[in-house]
Length: 116
Ligand code: AMP
Image 1 (cartoon, protein in one colour):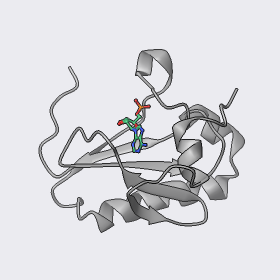
Image 2: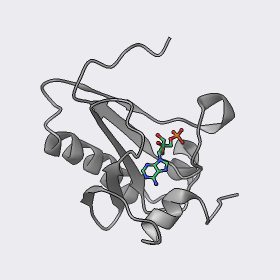
Image 3: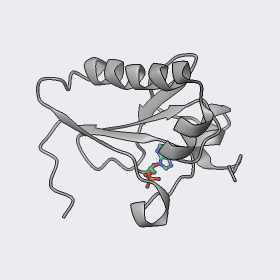
């Protein structure tokens, strides 16, 4: 079950500040507080969903499309298209997910090492 008190839910309710990169009706993008690359941005939909599977299952296709179009827009805004980037979405225990609100990590600005 979705935890309304997770930190990203609090950021969406503006109870906790964030360093915003982009926001629209359906999503919010902000800098990760503990960056793992020169550029490390998190993107979250404004839907109470735990992970990717939950987001896809419970959201209108228009919202899903809007979220991923916003990911693209942010990649453009961060000027990462030419140099490249990595997108990660951790899910569950084995995926190493810490915050139980679906999010994507956008990493770039330098060569990102292999995961293993
Ligand atoms: P994950 O392990 O995929 O759930 O990633 C959660 C990410 O959220 C980590 O990279 C954290 O550094 C990041 N994070 C946690 N709290 C905040 C916060 N208040 N503002 C920005 N990023 C955060």
